[in-house]
Each structure stands twice: as structure tokens, then as C-alpha cells.
Amino acid sequence: MGAYGGGLGAGEVCGAVFGALAVFGLQFSRGKDEEKENPRMWAMVREFLKRFREEIGQGKIYCRDIAGVDWSDVNALKAFYKSEKLLACRDLTGATARLLGEFMESEPFLKQQRK
Image (cartoon, rainbow, N blue to C red):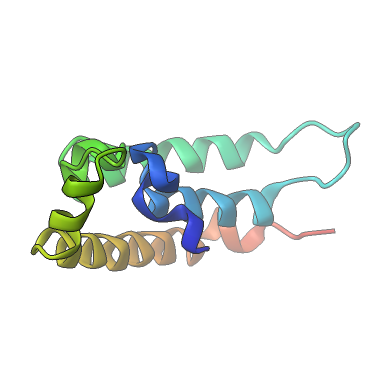
């Protein structure tokens, strides 16, 4: 899971969000190529992303925007890892896990049976 950090190390989608979306995929995916994905999953993912932006990401979803770091700049990375921004990312990851937990305890999530 370490590769998710830093928006996959490139400032892309926040690694905490990426990890949460993997959980939705594991719970709702059909697992067979010939079957379509579950539309309830997409509805929950959209709601999760909406709430992340509103409640956690300050309207943002990309790591480079949230953390304010150019992940291709070695000096910027060194400064980031010595700053309070690193602690903010830790807190954001915890908040994202709590939000995911809310979804995991919801009826649509619990009703979904993996086959």
C-alpha cells in the first residue's frame, strides 16, 4: 500500500482515496469479465468522493493540490517530509478511513454479498 502515498508518488489522486476506492471495488465487483459492475458501487463511490471533497479534501482530490507539493522536485519533497504537511497527510488519511468506515457500516454496503 506504500505506493499509494504521494498520489501514487506523482501527485495524482490522493492515496487515501485510492485505497478507499479499492475497498469499494473489492466489496462490489462481480469478479467475472462477462458481468457488468454493480451500479450501487458507482453510486456509493460518487457519494464518497463528494463527501471527501466537501469534508476532508477542501474541495480537492489530487495529492499535489491537497499537499501543495511538486512530487517531481526532490528539494520540495525533502521540505515536505520535514514540515507539518506530512502530519496533515496523516490526519487526512485517518479522516478518510473514518469516512470509509461510515460507508462500510451502511446498509447498501452490508447487504452486498460477495460471491
